[in-house]
Image (cartoon, rainbow, N blue to C red; front, side, top):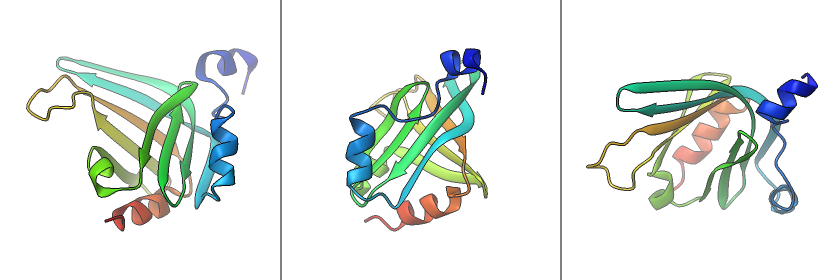
Length: 131
């Protein structure tokens, strides 16, 4: 990636100390430098921007990194995973979507991070087994 691209999109590498913390946990999936998009939807508006990101799936935690910062960081419990939607709309593309409001009755929009990774289906399968 060009230097200008890194400035705007980031390298897709998780910053320290979070990176060391995740690696020490023995992740089931750890992928960095993934190409993708960051999609913001609000009523009457749709914005999609390219990004570089990362995904880490540990035995007790799910982390998505995009736009040079942590976008999702939730413990692996059904309560938390019910707040985000994680799908593989293509065998090699992970889509993580979160509603921007904590109240389902209030629709202020959603945020989706789409990352290309060969681990997309595996991540979805592991998360679907969390109780």
